[in-house]
Image (cartoon, rainbow, N blue to C red):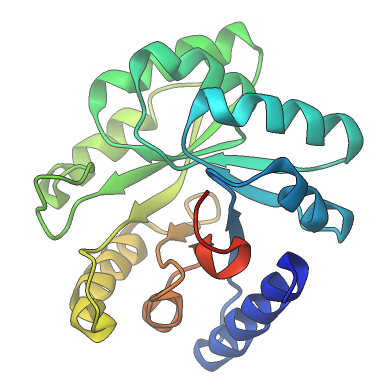
Length: 223
């Protein structure tokens, strides 16, 4: 199937699953390592949200697509490096992967310089995986309070990546824990729970995800 056919099939599954739990779920097309031609096939068909994780790779794609299509959103889902933050704030509408206190004032500084309000998610590491980024849940309350102190930052919610499991049902307890933390703080502004990818998005939605990040099932294997 074509990229847009894959996207529409995944979107249909997302909507059907979301209907079971009675809440809206957005689909982020994760285009990292994928060609701008594949992204453009989606943009031509009114797909608006794309996820990227490598700043240098993303910039030319963002500039090209933004020059041709209106109202596109680019989300940064990779590890946030301090030396790349200025470009991240300049080019991305939502940063999913804010995982430490020290980058908050830097994000705020660059957002102020660019006269924008930067939307962020706090990445949490519920499974305590050493190889994964994210703050420990015990620090979440403190980090939320810190983020709310910056006038050029809007905290939109949480992001979570579970351990990779062939049997995705093993991660349901982690998804439920993330959803429980999200519900604790949820309000009109804090309303995004980003979790679930190609192999486990249905379980994530059933547990309470409001945004799923799907790449391979839409674009095919990474280049």
